[in-house]
Image (tube, rainbow, N blue to C red; front, side, top):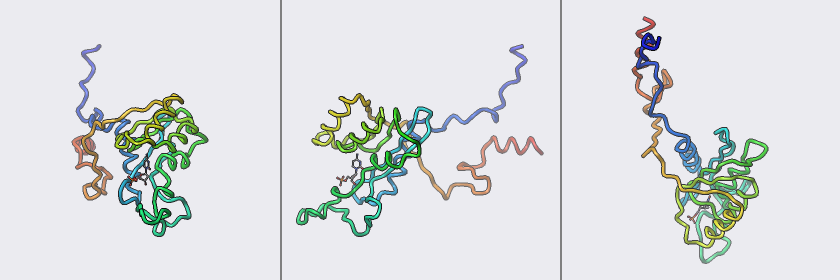
Length: 197
Ligand SMILES: Nc1ccn([C@H]2C[C@H](O)[C@@H](COP(=O)(O)O)O2)c(=O)n1
């Protein structure tokens, strides 16, 4: 029987160069960061549940009602109230507050930058159990050390992610709008067309 099975047609096998879950969710966090108005650091966060469903997305921005053309994006040492850090909502906090499920218990948060101590409190209290981050550039800062101290005590795992894809590009000019493919017409498409002819 086995040798009667027809060989798999090349056109019927699945694509192999699709992106993995971790790249997908981390890239989603980075896409969200592109919405940030912060001129120095743009951070995005993406919360995912056990079923690999995205349940929250956020980026760093001014609170609702605080006009981001009026509130400061700088740190003016001569005027202590002109400091963005007094006002900006961090990406992690926004992602948690933007959740589209009743809670984010046991979820994983993908975030561009390691969460500060304030975000660690939100993460712990919301029940998130895992943090996957890209950069830990503030590892030496007291806010990060305090963050890790709390996360360790609360049993929240965290690990640094190195993407598998070197780059992920969405070039709208390359999308073929006629067949909604992001790729040039594929060999499979050609095969289907010739099959139907
Ligand atoms: N885990 C983090 C860390 C920082 N942010 C935000 C807060 C600010 O908008 C910006 C950091 O500004 P910088 O001190 O680099 O000028 O990033 C966040 O959302 N999440």
